[in-house]
Image 1 (cartoon, helix red, strand yellow):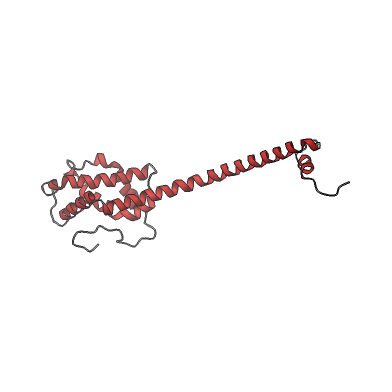
Image 2: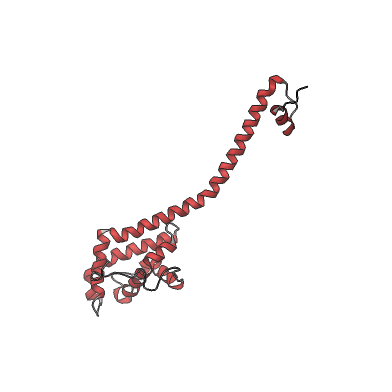
Length: 190
């Protein structure tokens, strides 16, 4: 009798199969590899389920950072921001003063509203957007979402932006210093 270990006999015994005849050993190997493949498939599926939320979160952060960069490099937003900053230098910014910059105000309002909607729908990361835009959104809403500018910027159309400002006002930005992220005017160094 041979004292060597026979893997096919062990596998057959482990799975409760009858002891194979020598010509049936190939079937035991096929069954063993099929079982191993099935276990590997289940393990990969579970690993995929674990990684999906991490991938989604990473994509949300990437999209938010890309949107933050747009605010800094887009020439249309840059010009609109300069136009709006010019308005805030004056003491009186009533309807007559603001009306010439209506297009610029709408451009910035639409940009900030798209951020608010993106956060609301889960496309953007709230924390990154808050650290980047909290002061700008708050100042914009405080300065320009008022009854005297209703013809230019109807508050009803900017509900998400106003709600975002209120939510950010209620939560403190962790890790940011007071005054960080404030609006830079054209006469301040960047």
